[in-house]
Length: 121
Image 1 (spheres, rainbow, N blue to C red):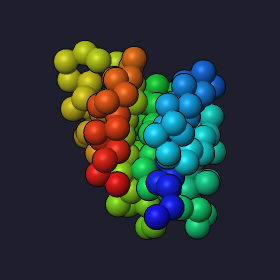
Image 2 (image 1 turned 60 degrees about the horizontal axis):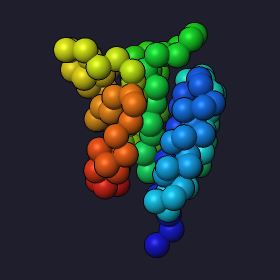
Image 3 (image 1 turned 60 degrees about the vertical axis):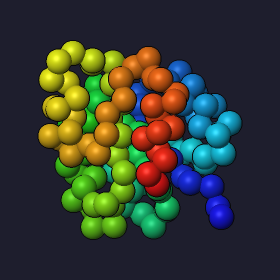
Image 4 (image 1 turned 180 degrees about the vertical axis):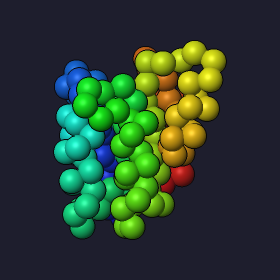
């Protein structure tokens, strides 16, 4: 079985580095984008992704705007999308789910919770 492919969308390269290192150690293959626009263009191709980790707070287009656009791509409407955000106040999880995310992980990321969320792919 080939490794599961994760698309990481985050405007902070340090977050991408940390997530990629963690996930590669668990045998996931990772691809990253520094903006939602770049990610949406990549998702319009035939490239295979089993899940998407998206930062909700990014300049230009944030995760709240990007997730509905991703879900409109016919080949991506069922891909697992996990919102990753430093916003961990009451109501933030619900706001992410209302935007179309399938799950929500707050920063700093609890690796066990992330792996549990990714277990469904």
